Structure formats: structure tokens, C-alpha cells
Length: 447
Ligand code: ADP
Ligand code: MG
View 1: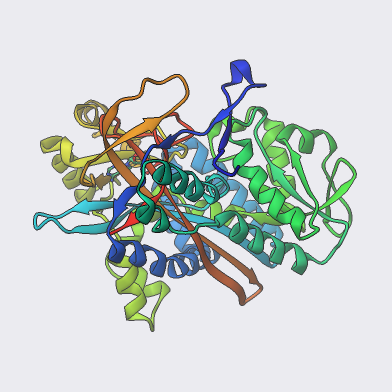
View 2: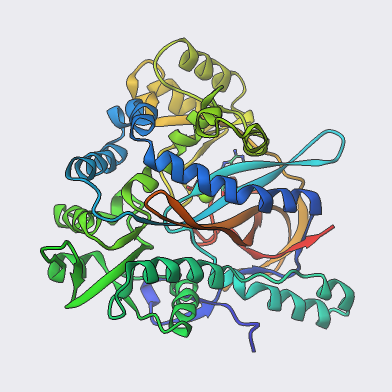
């Protein structure tokens, strides 16, 4: 029955379907910390949305990064072009996932620390809607009925679809489709299918298209309505386009520009894409910045700031110099992050020294930020993955919380927390998500 989670297999055997990797048992998570993560989500949604509308802030926050990072610079250029032409669509759809690790304190308690927020193609909302039944089943088979009843319901797929549906309704054309902009060969297709299926339940038509389809058949009519393959598109839901290698040619960039310019609701639009960069995350931790976004809400500021880990600039100047010294002295205390998404890009341990030694005297260092390394308490578990031997591992988990919002002009018409994701990996890996083949799907067991 629903204990099956599917994952498309590797590119080499792309017709093969296999199960998505998961932990044998759910992982204990302190209830208070879990609830804290859910409670702050709507504020994070608001924050992302406010940042996306603050052109001056984005420009200032990203100015050093775009001077040295070509990909971010290219995205920023697109953003400026859209601003110059004027945004044609006032409906904004945000599907975010804020990720956390629980930093272990000396007294044995743990504190919630944000790893990053994903505003682009935040995935696993679909598959994590199915994981509760997997662990309920496993626990029953293991004779742990009571625990099986404590597995939380979770249905981010329905929540994500609710927001997409809202944006589609506001767009207001029954014939127009929700276009999932996907990769050439999509390993994680079933994650997306659950969201598509929730939309079809609401009689909202969905289509899956690639950049190449948009290049070849995409056009705007005189009202800037987007047509792809002859069909009007109400919502473009990007599940591809966050990595430099997704833009294989100038035509791909043209296709992105065409979609950004159009009347279709973009999830995310280019400004919200930029709001999700790691550089913006670092700038938010500077004194007074959150206050600027929430001038009359000190309790919101406090709630958000409580989840911040230490983040440090590598811009040129004394502050950045201090960051370099700190990192070189104790590299194991930090993670060095370039402006990239998708897992496997961060730098740890002695490699931090190698990289920083190379760039510390030049502006190249501004492509990175430095972050305190979070140390969650390891928990033992079995990771079930196709073709991998079954063995007990010391594991670390990362909690994700899904948030959705829809804004029309100045009105926030929807702002919700729609579920969670727990991913677990062996502690011998410092980096990498489920798609990268390192982490596996899990469920929190609240304690
Ligand atoms: P990406 O955009 O590639 O997902 P992340 O910032 O989420 O970048 O980092 C990828 C992975 O690296 C995370 O899933 C986590 O396992 C690990 N990681 C990132 N930041 C930290 C940190 N500050 N402390 C410990 N581990 C981290
Ligand atoms: Mg991540």
C-alpha cells in the first residue's frame, strides 16, 4: 500500500524505478524544538517576501558577491532587467523550506539552528507526505505499536498544492496550466508527481516542461501571457534552474528571461530566488537588519534571530580579515559556503584552510561566507538504500519545515506552515542531501 516511496534510478538506467532511501526507524526529536521550528515558519515566509521586494537591500547585500560570482551576477542582471521593464505580474507564490539542525548544548539540551532557507525548488514535500506510513508500518512489524501511533501526520504535498492552486485561481484562467519546469532526466520525479496529483484533484491541469521546450515553443502574446507548446501557463513552478549547469546555453537564459517577463506567476520569481542566497542569509544576521524588516515586531525579530547560527562575512576589509583569521585558526569549527545550492558544494575542515589560503588576499574570497558548524547529537539508525549494505550507522538529522505564501499586490492572501521533512545521514558525511545520495528520508518521533 502506501508504504512505497519511489525514486527514479540513475541516469544510466533511467527507466528503472527504485525505492527512495529511508531510515529503518524514526529519529527522536525534542518536541519543544520541533514546535519552535513550525512556529517561526510563517515569519520566515514574510521575511523572504519582504526581502524580495526590497531592491536596495538586495543590491547592497549582494554587491560583493556579484562582483566575483558569475552565476549570482547573472541572476542579478536578470533581476535588474525585470525591474527596469516593470514586473508584469503582481501575484507572488512562495514555496519555501527552512532547514535546521539541532545544536547540542553542554547541558544536553539542543537548540534549533537554521542551516539555510530554500526558496527555489525546495524538494521532498511530496515524498515526505508518504514517509509517516512507512515508519508506522515498520514500527508495527517491530512490535512497537505505541510508538507507531506517535508518528505525526505530515502532508506537505497537499499544502504546497493549496498555495499553487491559490495562485492559479488568482491568475484566473481555467484553461491555463501549472507548468513544472523540470530537468532533462528527473531522478526525483515522484516527489513532484505527488504535488501534481494534488493539483489534478482540484481539477487544475499540470504540465511538465524542460527549458528546451520553453526555448523551442515558448512565447508571449501582447498581454505578456506565456504560452508553451500552444498552452497558456498560469504558474511556472521551477524545479530546475538553481545551478549554473542547468543553464547549458544562452538560449536557456533567454527562456528564463521569457518566463520572468511573462504574466505567469513564477515560483519563485527572480527576486525571491535572490532572497534565498546564502549571502543574504549572512547579511540578515548583522545587527539591526531584521529590525529593519520588522520595525514594530520585536518578538518576531527575536523568534527569527533565535534560530540564527553564527555567520561571517568574507568581504574585503577588517571584518572579513577577522573571519579569515578565525577560520584558519580553527577550521573544524566552521563551514565555508560558496553561493551554490543542491548539496556537495560546501567546504569543511582542512580544506577550508587550503581554499582560504588561496583566496584570502583577493576579492575572490567574497564568493564565500563562513558559518558556525552545527553539532547535532548523533543517533544510531539503519539507512536503507538500494545496493548499499545494511549496517548500523551513527547518524545526524536535518529538519526541514515547509512554508507557503501567496501575495497579490500588497495583500498577503495566504501564509502557512504546511509540514516538515526529516533527513538523516551517516555522521561520516559532512554534506549532501537525499538527491546527492547521502541523506535518506526519515520521520521525527517527538520526545
Ligand atoms: P545546499 O544548498 O547545498 O543544500 P546547505 O547549506 O543546506 O547547502 O548545506 C548542505 C549540507 O551541509 C546540509 O544539508 C548539512 O548537512 C551540511 N551543513 C551545512 N551547513 C552546516 C553547518 N553550519 N553545520 C553543519 N552542517 C552543515
Ligand atoms: Mg540545503
